Structure formats: structure tokens, C-alpha cells
Length: 325
Image (cartoon, rainbow, N blue to C red; front, top):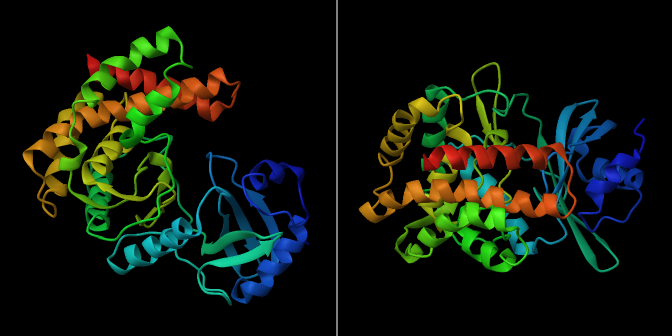
């Protein structure tokens, strides 16, 4: 028997869902009859966006995603489209479950639409606590190269953590940050203002390829998660974010040139990047670290005491310092 727990409230506040959660769960059983009877539902408390829950039923284990209230209907429909199109071209993503309303479901409450979907649970581990091997790096960059062949516009959800929006975030927040933080990030901002973003070739990009967004199971299979920051944008943003937050860390920093070269070599087997794009990647890696340092500095300043925010803050600062040496 499913029982409601108060700890779900912090996630549900991100959504338009106002129904008692027990009633919502019964609706899910009706909309997705193939998943069976829900026995247990546990929140995924990591992350800053959508509300995600792991569901145990008599038919197995599934994941429920209730979309963030700030997302537009187009953004959410495009999120589903990316998952379906990515699967068609061999990119390992979550397997969506089809309900009575299709792959994307809605309920309306007081004129607000609550969007949600169900997917199969992928039983694997992410790379947060381990450094990816070069084998893993090659596998994932090949999948990203496939993903980046998709060509369609996306109703984007603004990503305040991404390197492609760093200049805007700095302008919005430069009067809020401390002198120490500003001194740390201004060299990157100065260089970034000279970059001509309009020269970058575009495609559908994941936009947030960090270690917790890739799972690997005991069979050696992968699953790429969380397309909440996906956009139709420069491919170099994809590569630089992947290098910054998936590939490199303090443990493998001595091998960074080999890792960097491997990623670029594999990616350019499928995508012909111009010299200007290739030369921009190191700066965009640096911008990835600055983006996270800026964002976490603001959150901490506003009173965020979570371990997740603290860890991102420390990691961003350390990697930025290493990168500049």
C-alpha cells in the first residue's frame, strides 16, 4: 500500500500538482495500466529542477517525472521528442512507457496543466564517485556525436548553470557577488565577451553532460539521463561541458591532453568543426567551471546549505584553478 511522506513536498512545490499525492498515484495507475499496482514511491532528492520519483510496482520498477512548473508545454513536448528521436538513432536514453494519453500525460488543476511521464527504471550506477575510464569517455562522446546529428528547434528551458549563458548570468548577478568571487571569474568573462557565438554550428544538444547524467549497468550498457537543459545550440557547448564535467577531474588531470585529444578525434569523425570552433573549446571548458562557481556562490550567499551545492562549489573552484595553471 502506497503511503504519502512529507519529504515529497519540497519536490512537489516545483510543480503545479495540488492534488493529494495518494490520489495522483491512483490516477497514474489508471493512465498507465501496464505498470501495475504501485507499492512504493520514493523521491529523488538530488538536482534542482523537475520532481522525480522511483516507483516500485508488482510489475517492476519505474521512474515518474513531474515537470517543473516553469517549463512551457512546447519545451516539455520537445523533451519527449528528443528522447524518442535519440532512441531511433541509437543513443541510449530512458525507455518511455506509453500510457492511455501517449508517452506524455497531463492532468489539469485550476487551469494549470501538470505534465508528467513514466519510464522504465535503468538499473545502473552513475560516475559521480568514480573517474570514467577512457573506454567510457569514447563510448559517451560517440553517443553525443550521434545525438548532435538531430536537427530541429527546441522550446528551450533557460539554463542558468550552462556555459552558453554565462555572460547573461554575469550581467544579471554582477552586483550581487562578492569582490572575491568577481575577481575569480572576471578573467574568463573578459575573454568570453570576445567570442563570436554566431560562428558555432548548431544541433540538438543535451547541454548538461555531467557524471550523474550517465548510468552504466553490470552488462556494460549505458543510459544518458536528464534532457532538461537540452537546446538547439552550438555543438561546442556540448563538447566543452562534457569535457569539463564528465571527462576531467583531479585524479586524471595529468592525462588531460590525451583525454581532450581523444574526445575531439572521436567527435570530429562525425562532425566537421571549423578551426574557430575547435579553438573556442578550451575557453568554454573554463567557462563551464566559472558558470558553476558563479551559480553556487549565489546559492550559498542566499543561504543554501545543501551538500550538493557545497560540493559543486568546491569542485568548480578547484577545477578552475587547475585549468588556469
